[in-house]
Length: 361
Ligand code: FSX
Ligand code: SF4
Ligand code: F3S
Image 1 (cartoon, protein in one colour):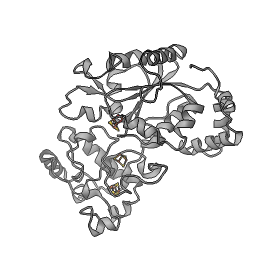
Image 2: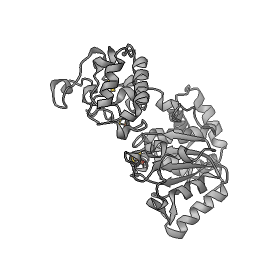
Image 3: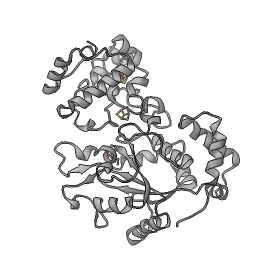
Image 4: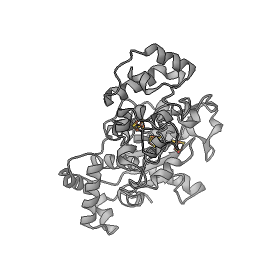
């Protein structure tokens, strides 16, 4: 059912107390890195607005992004869906099927023409429209059709943001990202394979609160969550700075919690909030669980040359990856320059391991 209720009215009808609402606003305020005094202002603006309609489409992906979303804890997906947004169409969460599902999409698009948020999960195959279809329609047709009247598009996951795993060499389906196709709408990329659930809900909440998309980095990702690298905020960083590295997953260094760089950690070149926001209600995150970061929120992480090679660099992206590494190093104050460039480029060509010392020389 398509509703036009204000958020304030919806909350009252769902029995949400004033206190509960202010608590929600405080959580939002801190999540969006705003001053705590903004909580009341956020509450006032939220109360008056209409719940935004959200249409969520699935293309080539594993549905891990939706799985991640359903494990969000602040705000929970239940509170987000039932109280704060109107999730009018979501191909995996939708109770309706067949014609009723098609009608739900059609109704949402018409009732909120020009105002709905389109969320896309997955990449779009261009090699053959028949490679991925829903209800007999190709992903490309559905995307173009639904994007036409959207206010903005949120590309959730590295597949929708950058092509993702379906795009892995030799990219048999011709998989591309949302921004490769849609050029006339604001697009926000929430990368990660999958993205952190709180980042997905945080971006939706930001849009809900301010009715504009947050500030983005050069890859279209919200700076609030993607400005720093994993390495910038990693709790193992003091070991990296002292040159203390685990050499295998069960050696003394690993047991003492030393840096995982030599075991393939891509934290220095990866922009994401795992080290601060963490996963599963702030329980842990990959590096805390003892495994290096795979770089899952960066373009082409899937063709990076091996998850267990120390900062292995894909040959096709030498310049870009060298840029990332240098940027990460400069931000960290750990890398002195590119004096050893020829050694690095040679190693890249041969797809060899590059050590911390090589970068530091
Ligand atoms: Fe891609 Fe999301 Fe990785 Fe999976 O659907 S970002 S394959 S976690 O689920 O799109
Ligand atoms: Fe942490 Fe990885 Fe950086 Fe080591 S290389 S400090 S484990 S992010
Ligand atoms: Fe992905 Fe690295 Fe975080 S692999 S989940 S960005 S720690």
